[in-house]
Image (cartoon, rainbow, N blue to C red; front, side, top):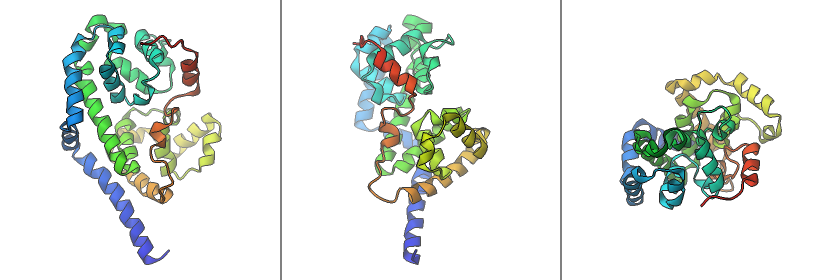
Length: 270
């Protein structure tokens, strides 16, 4: 590699890492900028003006703007079409071990229920702060990450990992989320072939290579993501890479049993 090429590679790495840190280090300002965008402000105003009047799962499903806003806030925008599935998730709640959301490997569904817990609180579910400002905060963060991805998908992945890291408890949880898996595989320089390996073996390898408890420490997460941004640029040097793959893949964060469940459900949603 020539000196000029090496300098160019370094510049790209610095640009990716700097873009991520500029957003992350002044997150309130970054989120405020997103909140002020006309389209975001318009949908947020509508959500806040209407959500208090949503009293049942049926009400929620019937208002397309409310429904889409809440799903996007929880990173489930691509699942908006599966209304029967979402209805089942919300109807059963999360209080029981056998409730549908608790049986799924993807934690986003449980998070949706916790924000809009009709099963537990009935007609008062949307009166709580977590159903109002809590969902708005999630929507704005999700929008911020998507915006970052339009410029550099490595930045979006880093922001997503930073947000999610404190909730990670095991290697299997990483494998259940395509975006988290992408970050970890990239950072550890794991070959694509490992995706086809036994899941238990993959999870053990990840846990042997990484101390999962480190993800509770923001400083250690920062170091981890510093390496990720560098490795990302090395592994994705061309325009041939599909930057939205970790987020647009229909199975992103969704286990096989979940997909089978969708296919088996009667499409009775509105």
